Image (tube, rainbow, N blue to C red):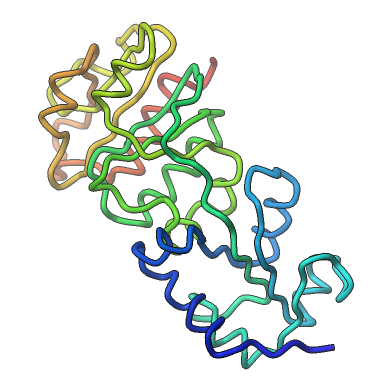
Length: 250
């Protein structure tokens, strides 16, 4: 039997496009059967509500009797979906505590990366290389921005995501080795580091913050060809190259 969403529920879900409302309600949105299956399997997040079309039920192997499922028609899904082509499953998920610093051997810190697509791609890279935690500065795109969530392709459910200040992280984690990606650093393949280690990635436009430069134990660069015209690499691409250099065999 199809459910009918109230106008207030539709308004609440639509408001979650904005960070202030995600903070107010402590909720974010994830869409698609793949993301749903990942969330159920990983159990890192608590799903508050699940909305699915009949097609979505079939794709996810669910029935209308699955706990928490509200079956809606495509017209209603179009009203609440954040995607250009609406998905068949949409989940409302509780935002976990992002303030506690977990124990880790390897982590990333995103320093002023404002593009949601880059942030999502870096989270996906962290998942690929088995990086336990990704931290963000206050001026980095919100981890639960819908564009970030979609860009992770489900990897946000397998990586710890935390708000953080690099200075407090440095002070709070014993013997932390901070590695910064810097155009003037040494070649990444020559750098030697110890665990626990945190690789700091700055924005391709503004680069690293002064605080990150001051706290760096190691500064590394990705050598480019001498004939290059490019002044810098995309932040997510640089993160992938450096994660391969440092964390591939750990």
